[in-house]
Image (cartoon, rainbow, N blue to C red; front, side, top):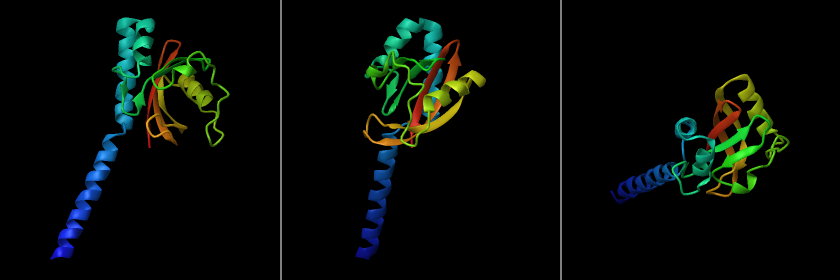
Amino acid sequence: MKRIALAVLAVFIITTGLCFAAAERGTPQEAQALAKKAVQYIDQNGKDKAFQAFNDPKGKFVDRDLYIFVLDTNGVVLSHGANAKLIGQNLMKLKDTDGKLFIRDLVNAAKSKNNGWVEYKWENPKTKKVEQKTVYYEKKGDLIVASGAYK
């Protein structure tokens, strides 16, 4: 009887821990919703005010490991909710750990389709580890507004 009780307790602890860990990460659906919310914010408030809001690490456009980043169609970072040091940099030649030119791929995808998904590896701002990331983007004029979830 004690073994059964211990087994049940172990299963409870493991599943509770997994649920808690999952809650600390954003989902692809939440990333998509955040990007859509950011596009609406640009429409309602203009680029300058929007970028200021997106860049605020404690603002309403940062949620756990989800954040907004905005590129122009040349691959220059205009706004970044997790790393302000990237703002103003052209990242077209930046490769992920697998050698993928992921910003180039994101820009090219946005040029051919106004919204969609791209995948690459990037450092998770919470874990500080390079992880697979799935990013939802929307093209808004000459802007590419994006948010991604880490896997």
